[in-house]
Length: 139
Image (cartoon, rainbow, N blue to C red):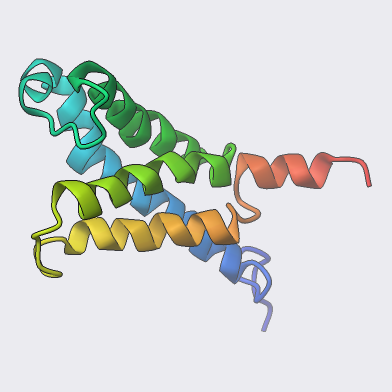
């Protein structure tokens, strides 16, 4: 019985990383990024500013981390680097903005930290732009 190259034992971790990248990015975009972009005026009026940067800069940084970075992570372009602003934003949110949240109240944020932390540590895998570039690079 032959298994396809896509489902081979060596490809399985890469499929797992692809799944983590796509689902993590989609959730971050759908739950946080797109609503902030679509309602930016009201977001600007009530966004928390724990670092004292001002609401405009804070919202711009949040939009970058919640829209641009997830798109880069999803396609696997500069994946590890693109995960860092997401992790920083989530850490600030969980530690400075919502320190009073219980584990249950903050579970979505903590799970995103786990997903994007895993991606930052493991890299994008073979099924990514980064992986494609790595395979094409001269050795």
